[in-house]
Image (cartoon, rainbow, N blue to C red; front, side, top):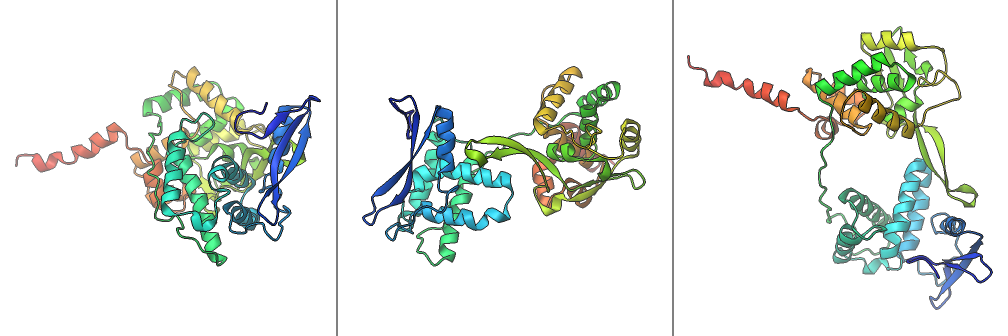
Length: 378
């Protein structure tokens, strides 16, 4: 018996068989292809490799409907694949195969109306996902963005599209980001100085520079200039899906940051420069390991950060809270916003102010006190 929602079956000979859509006949009938494996997991991995996005050279017979959303989406993906990072490729592939193709794949472009797109977005919000308990607004907004890109691609190719999705909006629910208070930051700082092991030093660097977790993992001593007291950020380290070889695995890649703006030079405070100089054991290699080949990956840094918080008596937080904490402290100290935006590697000041600056109650009180002079009796 197959697992619910999947064309994967266990055969009488104990092998697992997976079925996928290979092409269509001149009458539009689906032609199926098959994969075989010893285990369910292996069959699922092989089946994933046969999805249109990983095998775009599908037998396209003369009657294969070029107006099918799945065909247009595959062509769109192929056209942008070389322009985006491998992690983004994986993200788009997963969203197309998991959320979009099941709802839009067999629809022709002329049947994808405003009402249809809106209804499917609402369905994903309420009943999407493996557990059918709904997807987050961010995920659905990302899904909608891909649908828009595919439809606009179709328009550029001269195809008729009733609605390009631009008028449809998914209202994002803002989530509160954890920002360490000054007291919490001081506790963490004291713990790190008492326990200056490699990952703790990395946490300290992020606290005073705003580096992302992938950026600190990729940072090398060659990127640190003690004479100029700067850090040159031009790489990020991340674990991504590796779909080669028939079985989906993961691998570590070191690549350029998420955008051109993220390639930047950051001045470092005097005290941090002194601490780094004392910690440095090698002239080359990764800062977190003092080794040219051995690195620390982001998940390990996440775990080390949570351990440091627990050991310093601070409530748990995600590693990205360090970046938000850095931005908030800078504003409290009166940083020039444009400078802060460039230090964080943002494209605009609006991103810095709207996403990364979280005024504390203390700062709000200080600002409100400035109004007292207006009430002062003269």
